[in-house]
Length: 369
Image: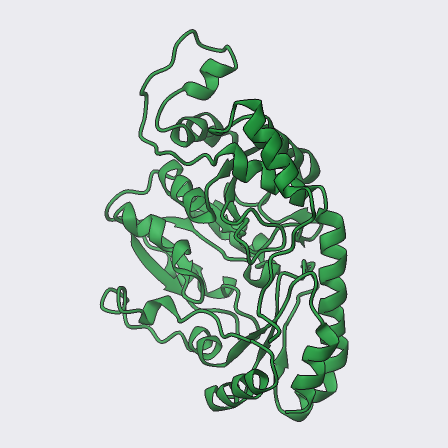
């Protein structure tokens, strides 16, 4: 069976983990954490980077930094993972779900302004499949209404919007290094801060509500509890694993892009024949080959295709169930029909994508359908 995902190991993960263990500093914010953070700040121009134990934790920090309070409203796409909405719900906010674009799962920027009320505090665009949302339109709306933009860039490492790195455009952003992502740490995430007003408080929230980071830099002579927060920083073991991946980022990206292009070039005729839509990219966006998806013409066609692939040794999976129709939130949703989000729920299918993939085999199985 060709799996949907297979974590790629570069060969140095255990070497660096051993170095971290032998250093005597494995609790977090040690040499590997700092190396990873510095790399991302220098390569992509993020003003401040803080590694976290997950992308969910990074989004939790965003909700705290945005000072989300009970009664606030936050605009979130419905077609996304629960972690996009959960941190704001935990702060007591009402999540207002937006529909996807008609031809791709990203939030439809033209529908956002109509959802804004006096209670709206933030917009959370999700760069689905690592392909950018229309960030100029979103930032213009945010500026007009004085809203905070939090990029959910979980899938978007090394991807760009009009030449600008995703995660560097909104006021705050969150990335994932889960084992299904381009570069991984098993679990793991990253908060990027692009608005300087959030940097000082972010370090405090990151360190359990204390000014411990300032203390270790010698900026204060003692540290204590000064704000809310939690234990968001990862251990050095996670950071050491991630550093081995970072060293191979360019090679990993080249290989994934090769697979992506093979899919695209060899499925065009087949997809047209079966009225299946291939993954859609925009002129303003690059593609980081996080995933390759197709959109079937119906849920029945998708079910048959999944069965065909499985019978022939290929594991393909569908993705999100629209959050507005979830058991937890459906009675809190305002009742609007989000037809595009529901269509992707029913029809989108993700194909295997990982470094060591036999992509030719997958294409052969698909085109025999």
